[in-house]
Image (cartoon, rainbow over all chains, first blue to last red; front, side, top):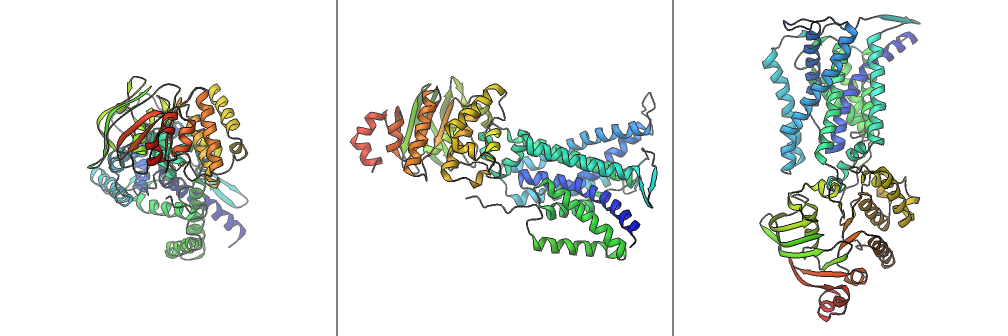
Length: 310
Length: 239
């Protein structure tokens, strides 16, 4: 591999890792608060991409209902991102309300909630299939792609946008969780939810906030993903979702840094494995490496073994 | 201030309190004594409005606080709106947060930032040990320090009425005395204190009044001095 190729792959890996990291965040946030693995989360990413598709198409004037004015691509992109994050958050919060909260109030075991999450994911996938059919949709190009070449390395503005956005999101979320009272409440709930109530903190508000954060980040990943790879299909969230979940576990689930580092590790392994070996071996080798990582450190890179509460 | 009348509560089908009545007046220091399983913690959890499965269901009776019916109040509002703080059994501090974060999280619902910073100072002057350990994780504290932190946390909730569940449990006698002295100090500066204890020696030494519970009933009540002298109490509860 030449040095140029190495850096070319490096950039690609950063972008690919960004998608995993943004989705892994949602898994890790919800797990950090409820100790629940929200298996519907990959499909929230898919829902986000579809919502973005419809909003962008509407803003571009593809439907009979049209805006009285014409917007340029960049403005449409920004509006699409914002509305998609808001609407997708509503979907995430609705799932929490309808599926998880009733189980929590009845004191159901965690296994039942996880199975419910799996089913919610399947409902989203198949609901989409029933509603919109199996045909793929292609996401309109909102941002005019410009290609830059520096020292033999080529990259697009979209790639830079994806990477920079992910880094900003990381800083924002770390700040929220480390510095704000709401963030402290999020960390405290998984430790002792009754004691959180005794501090005068409304549990449900904190939980809803967590789902809003996680879902809006998945939505952001969805918009960025289809901007870079403009194909939508109902199962697009399944495999990416699983991989992001694995990334979150490898990084140390429940830890925000873990989601990012895990996401980037997975991105790097996948890209470099595919660069060296035939691409059919990509997932096999990538997951074998992750298995090894986990067997060396079962709590994940940043995970701390939880002391059993008596 | 706090008035409980004919309170019956149950866990599932098992009744744990069979119609207890008690009151705590503004500014008082009241103790609730009794052996293990008498229903002392159950009484506190009913006041805090915690929900099953951790807490019982109230089947009959009333709990009112400053004239408000507490039974219709959501658990987090008991603290945030009515200013009742609980120092729970086993302390239940957040081991994954630092000491400072444990105190800060208690101010979640408060808006009075000026008073909050004065309250921090108060907590650190009452418990200088906590000030030394500000940035340490909660689970690295000793039992006594955890108890201090739990008390500081209840105080930081802005509670004018503090309930304590077995604060002396697992502590060395000297430390126990220290904690009760701090409680007395808080009480003298206006905080109402209602403490549940198995260790009646120490509770009766500092309280104004006390109730004695046995298997879900209140069997005796009176001033702390009288109860400390009463032979029956001595025999049954002071061993």
